[in-house]
Amino acid sequence: MENKSNGAKQLEVTTLGGGCFWCLEAVYLELKGIEKVVSGYSNGRVPNPTYKEVCSGLTGHAEVVQITFDPSVISFEDILNVFFTIHDPTTLNRQGADVGTQYRSGIYYHNDDQRRIAEEKIRQLDAAGLWADPIVTEVVTLERYYPAEDYHQNYFARNPVQPYCQYVVAPKVAKARKEFFQRLRATA
Image (cartoon, rainbow, N blue to C red; front, side, top):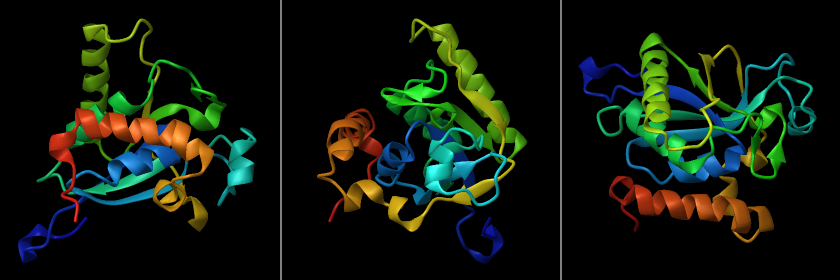
């Protein structure tokens, strides 16, 4: 966290898993107040796992994005509002055709405030009855985090014509742009 007393921004970090990390990364990179998004793996049993190891489903890791944000521009609750809009939090260990524990829905909090806000948000959403099934998003402390290989970073921007990007990532980005247009960064 940067020190605010010297005039620098005070940044926060959170880690979210909502299926394939390419989708989450592409959406969050477009939002004002998001300083950095790094795709990676969290809370598994194997140190420094590879993508192939995580995809086996045997390491216990979740595909996640670690988000560094400026809470004076975008709140943690706003980040969660986007999160619950761009993935299905009611499907256990899957998002669409991506199936396995590595694709689980999770909020890997970095402090007690994030835990409290996440748990309250889930209670509110379940009470609102937005989905036919209850939310199964796990809310647990971030124990371990490993950045994914370089080729996974900024994947959608670098591979827009790749079929998975066209058919899975692009619709989620379009939905987020429509729902959160007021939060989008200005384009050049």
